[in-house]
Image (spheres, rainbow over the protein chains, first blue to last red):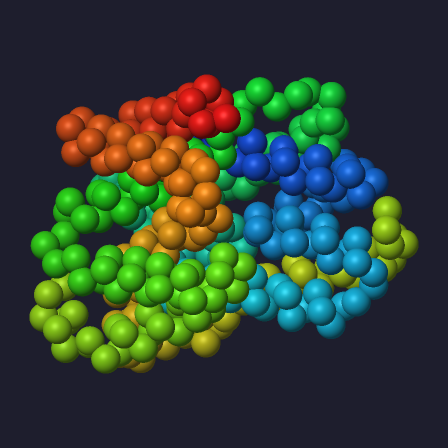
Length: 232
Length: 111
């Protein structure tokens, strides 16, 4: 791969990451401030964003260390909060095929937002597929690392007059969802996903509904395999 | 710091390791050089659409429609995104516009 090809892949990848840029800088900063409030310095914040790189779990981790030294509950909590990533992996199996060593970084970098972009993006034919996916993933993680670092360094000095900006990530998912509805003939899968999530949110409350939702989705797509295969 | 350096390293290390293992599990179970079972292929095809819907709900999980502002900022902004997107079909415009409307609403109307 020549340098020009890299530049081209990066240039085509960047626009897809702009919504994440805004959202990750802000949410990352909020995480950095939270770390600071427990006296975790810049290096801890950066290490967390580089090596854990799972936003909601990073927020939870601050609560975990604040409640004392308990590795078992940290392990269980991680399994519960991050279980949804199994779904992302299964969905990405075909797209990540034959990417060589880059695949292992793409797996590490598969956050909610990166997943939603990678699963919906149409890769332009003149661009190297592997590097395109790699740069989208890398750019997103860089935004998160920079956001959390800045938050940890200066967050408490700057007052937040940008209330509501974290809505940008909700908007990203909403737009991908609309795009899906507009381009597909059958909306059965969207109904299954949204219906399961709303039902489980109402039954299990805001903090424990993801795992029941995933189980319900699995049951429904298995029961409805025949009609779904006819329509997709 | 609430914990010592080594204790903190252990806790953050465990979280990091388990997160990676969860993310890698499907790729370890179904490596490139082996034919992926039909059922898993089927799941890989149908799951993405359902997960995006789940993520939208996940983002809105803390909205309480029974208490002020009754989810109105979210409802109005998402309505605007839908209209903008069907009208112009530009991802960045829809996301940017929707976010600005939401910010205006929570900063000036629904304080």
